[in-house]
Image 1 (tube, one colour):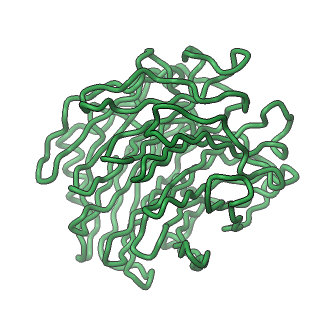
Image 2 (image 1 turned 180 degrees about the horizontal axis):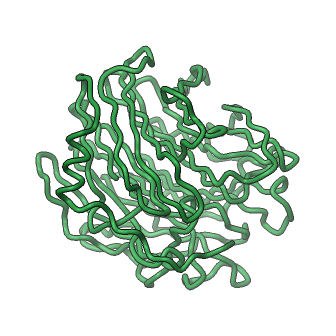
Length: 390
């Protein structure tokens, strides 16, 4: 894995950003709020609780040895809480490559759970000194994060990042892909470490997929748990190291309980270093992914396993990456993506609102100067509005 010692590029000044957002194209409909990541952080991840509070984590510092911070914005407020550092050991996270950063989930009682792939200086290490799979949770008082722990017991070989999911019953899932000693992308699998006590302890990780499909080594993945306690995992395959299809695993916590759905095909004899997205929608679960420079979303009906036809961002693709998708109770969907980003190269941001028939409608917009290694997050608020954290 290659590291880059360049620091994060500074964002637009506040007045310049205000002008950019004022110039963003809009055609009416549901408002889309565009919010800057606090403190010039990058790679924000966002979650909204039942009260409408917006919870955000982000990275700050050296891309090869970054820190993870957490802030919250209460309903009706435009102010962020004071940042809390998530990682107790400085420099234990990675921004390089955009795919290896932390993910956040809200669990029982809206407790905040964070998981991330450790950096070269992260502690505690994995088995045999391997790169660790780190996890931290907000304490009972909501005042600080408990010291991070490595939940990896044997499935070493982290490269493309990881994810976390949590449900309202107290289950927490830390998810990553690794070869666990096997060589080659075609031998990689998806691993899940489960906690049934709100993250106090984790069982030994189990494989829940990827054995037949492989997993793209330096691509990110996404985990999501719905209110019914079902777990969903979206990742990029590496079958025969050329079939880079998007795969959705859905179901329970045991290896035999998961259903596999091939979401999209893509033949490519290289790793595209892509990310994926999963979030809740009024119809079930919304998926976001990239194929050949275009971004898409689909909606999954969990009970039947029916997956809607892919909906793409309007216009010609080619350099579109890192989708984020949010859906509100009215059936509207916001698709957000980056334009023109690449290895050690920034780009721009774009978004489009779709109606319940998945037709482009309402607000669309764009903003320049997306920093190196950055991406955006999207979420739906309880009142139906959308928010982009950028």
